[in-house]
Length: 296
Image (cartoon, rainbow, N blue to C red; front, side, top):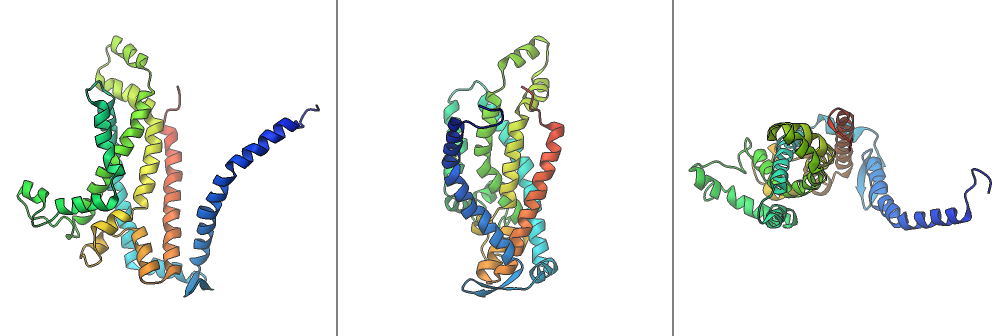
């Protein structure tokens, strides 16, 4: 066989490979790529109903950038990320370290922490709305206060962030726990022989070695926070005075597209959200070169 030519067996194996991934690729194109292309096109059009659109150029984007609700929703989304991502990752890492220690009923604790992820979002929201109730909620009963956790514009976003962090801790902790368990015990044994304290071992061994898993978890949590919708939709009602102080970009997309019927403007908001996610992801990949350790 001449150099550079592929054998019949290799071609057959390559064809089978393409055949195996074909369902996934087709599903990705049909369910993700093509709808996103349609969304980009719709953002430059006015929806006339029954699937008909009229091209209006940048009119939707001009209206979007001139809308105060849009900028407020953008700010709410970014603030929500600041409130949830760092705190959630920190608590998840702490929980993962505790679960990785030699404790009894370790499997049971993992199940307990992971339970919020398998609970229906509606059920979770109903429980937390009861906890946050300003009149007979558990939280106000404990602190002896009358804070309007959900209806006060100054507090409502923080309340939603608390629920988001509580719901995500178990899933993130399980991911980080898998990273912790891949760290060789020999590193800690050598550090103990050298007299390194537990804190020193954490910053010199644990944190660098778990940084790849931490990086992936951070990206996933950031994307989830930027796309938050269901939590806010179920926590804050349409008649809630704190709605404008809480609504995210995706929530505003829902209101413009399916309530107001302005799908062109809603598509422009969706494109803007994807752009923010893309920029944030690029900055994360640039920054990870300085703190993520891929050495084994």
